[in-house]
Image (cartoon, each protein chain N blue to C red):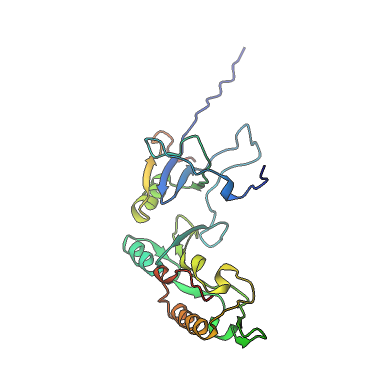
Length: 180
Length: 64
């Protein structure tokens, strides 16, 4: 009589607490009894993107410089994505003497993508300011915004559009704006 | 009773003494399958500033 001996080893993955989340790091493996047709495998190519771990920060440039100094590689410098606000919004006077500001058709975001030969294209550092900004396209405001102080609203919006286009738009300036 | 099932309906997880989520509430984490656990852990802790809650198991070795 022969005995089939099956060694079952339960390996525990590494865990890194990163900001407000946990990154669980495990090796390739499988298939296992509960999923006999599935294996766990790392990215097959650093040139193929299959998933991104988004890291939202207040100051993309600061993080970019800091992590580069620690040895991180990025595919590009931080840049603003999306359409130019300055050419996609317009103001007009409506019958009730308020102004309507039309939103751009696509949101803008500042981000940079981290590169690593080993980890693949997996990390994207994006600016959290765009989740809080009063610029309508960034948080999906209605297409039309009404303002009781159209002149001030236009000045504020124009200034922030300029800040975004020059990359000087920071979270500290993103307080709720009563005029927008 | 509310039928709401978005993020607001979850209670944030509390942490135990080792910094892991206690078995109450809900927390969402990200699992990475990597070629070299040691190198990945070093990257996420040293470069990104993460805290290593559990180091790679040295007995696991590198799978072939």
